[in-house]
Length: 428
Image 1 (cartoon, one colour):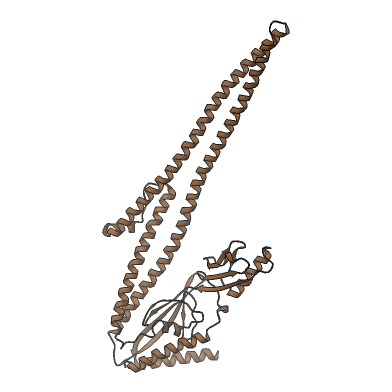
Image 2 (cartoon, rainbow, N blue to C red; image 1 turned 30 degrees about the horizontal axis):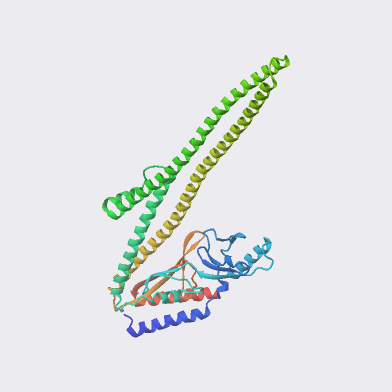
């Protein structure tokens, strides 16, 4: 039979009480195990400038500048604080460091299926299946005039999906443009599905044109900077050539003065010339040698400028490549995040439609039977776990509640079998 309004009211009250009781009996925050993407607030008393928010990286680490990376995944906040203090001591930075670690945010949980409000909910340490269902508005109530609410949920999910798909397309287009910048090509190789979509969607077509404009502007800016540095290097090279010609002319002059001085010295030895002429030639030879030293100095300085200019060209290219690679890594991370949200919204859409169809097809001879499963990532793979109302959830878990409508006798048989299985497990 269909449950009465009083029964549904009592069910809602019991669900709320379960949340309150669970909050009182939940595991202390000090026992919470830190996971990837958790956000922490760390205070180091001797170094207040290090106090701030830190997000756990995908490799399970955080980075504190004085002591480097610390593995925090799988540890409690107390263990992390102790590890930070030990690292300060081992590094010789501080003999009596003090640190506290506070959990600001963890991965959310997702509730899907036959609940009032399927969706994403913040994780609270120690939360159970029943408490999560309560957060989602409780069990789906078939006699509640919620069909309109389901329609509104579908409309909201569709709006979210449009935004997510638009962001996904933008990220894909941006990634293609960054790859083109790395290759220094004048055109972008967009994925075929995106170009096909652009033929029917003016918004996507505008997006692709926008990325092409960014590409041309960025490459033009890079080429302008490189051309300026190349011109500077060419000027210094021309300067070296000019000074080298002057140096060669000076060497010819030095050779001529030296030959003339040799002749004058021979003539003076025979008394055919005066000392003044030899003195003049000695002075000229000294001036020529000083000029040669000046030319060598100018050539060395110009060569140093050429080396500095070439280093500037290398640094410009290196910084640009590093920046593009960092942007590509961030885009890849964002793409994975958006793809996961799209999958979640598609599941929410399917569940909302299914719930709507079930809502409209009630029968007085049928009763509800529910199946609760938890989808959890373990060792990089999704594992499906059968769960009960008291099963504790972990960050990132997807709680799936499925309702089936079966004859009363079948429901009683299922209940007896579940009771038997439960008693058998307890006996083991």
